[in-house]
Length: 339
Image (cartoon, rainbow, N blue to C red; front, side):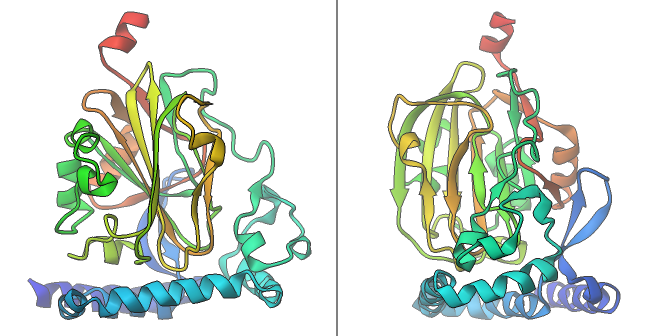
């Protein structure tokens, strides 16, 4: 099985290099939701090679000695410091050009207005650039970040197809034996952000903040190559989470997970306080430099994810989405009673 996997990686790498290297499209295959086209994520070739070297059975074995954990953790901290320095602003233009970022979607749109690369990294959307799907309908859940999403009707299905870490579970993710079981057999959506993405994240639903927790941790990559290894990425990385209490969906778990080069995972202070209200589409928090990931978990029988996302996810293909697009609709006795 390992030999077949390696051969697949090599073939995938060679084909993508020959045909798509000029557009930096050498990452994982995704579906662009707006057009329905299959595409590859833009990614430097060196990064793909690094991922293949870091996440394979030999390196995963070495990780039992924590060598890779320590290396990635310290590298992430150092790179985060560099991105906050005044000299880092010189990187912005090359970064925008490399990834073909449409600055018309952001404010400020002029890249010279950013004092550091860190400031640019947490750039805000221009008002109106990301409309919220059925904003006044609390039974419609929305996409939480510009990202690539997979969604599964049960955690067990997500672990079988997408998240292969040995110890991944909702209980281990939140480190809470009372909270975890509430979502253990429920639907789950996984959002993966790349460095070129907008790195603010938004609430999928409207409701009341019920619980907040912040947990320190490592800074592993969250690329699919890493997630589909046996390394327990999501339950080791630094993360913050909130539980949002809603009438339509029951309790909803939102976990913001740091990754390589992320200096901060930060949920805004007002949403760290139980009892505060949040509306669907409200900005919940930010990541600082690097790739990152978000897990949104629902209680069993409380959401029906959109069919296009479910269909792609069953084939281990992520869907390229934007903040505010539809994620799914509420189902269950409470919603039917109210309707």
